[in-house]
Length: 56
Image (cartoon, rainbow, N blue to C red; front, side, top):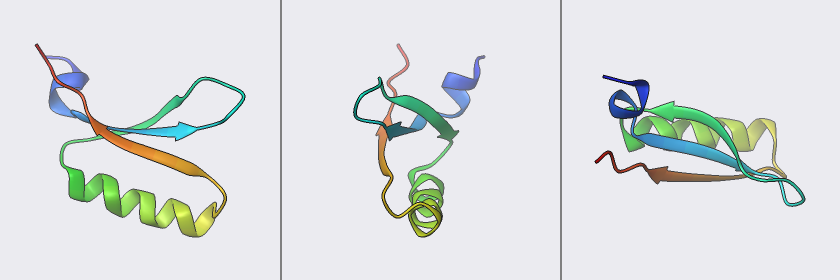
């Protein structure tokens, strides 16, 4: 079983001139949202996206 199966919630940092960067993976959405809240305090101008990766 890969880390993609164990941690399906992905946080991506959006950097406009470059492709998105996978920043972290989480096993539940609450952890991902909490992590984004902390990062927004540390990096107020940064943009993040959280999404669920579907494992086939």
